[in-house]
Image (tube, rainbow, N blue to C red; front, side):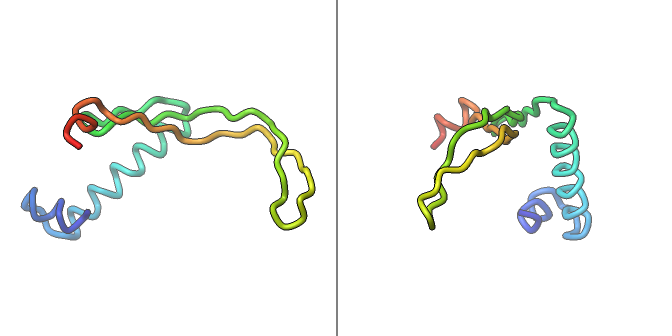
Length: 84
């Protein structure tokens, strides 16, 4: 992605890498803060809560509790979905 970003933007690979790293850092920081991040033309990232549930250890078949947690959700932008 960095190579393509450098080619399309006219930046050096080092500059394009720094820009890409900065964008990823901004998205991660926003998600950590509980914000929804929209990337026009791509989609929307958000943090979703997962409920505690019972799981099964595939090695032993033993039931085990899985604690509640968080996961990153992604919803595809309509324009991207139509383009595919």
